[in-house]
Image (cartoon, rainbow, N blue to C red):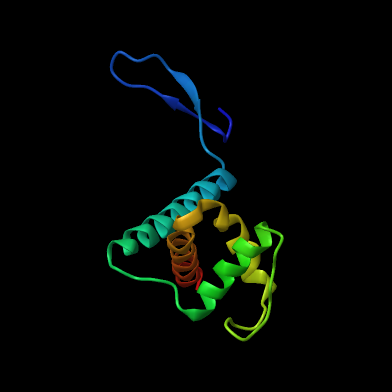
Length: 118
């Protein structure tokens, strides 16, 4: 019997080999479960009223402007230009009015993942 299979026997059962997940498969499953848990908890946090603060609102607006090919990075009414958040908010802008809620879920899930990885 190889290291990757086990024999399953019992009353009325015939012996047959069944695959055993590898260590890499278990790591992948644990990672997927952690990501799902972080996203689920972050989504549950939307049950309490909340809204993005000043900087995230600016990033969300820039994401929308970037998709409309009309980007204004003046700092009179928005935070300093930061390209990394806009890489996330530009795709979120496709969600329309749900973009702020999606940003909250994404940022909170990232915070929970940081705690889990610490």
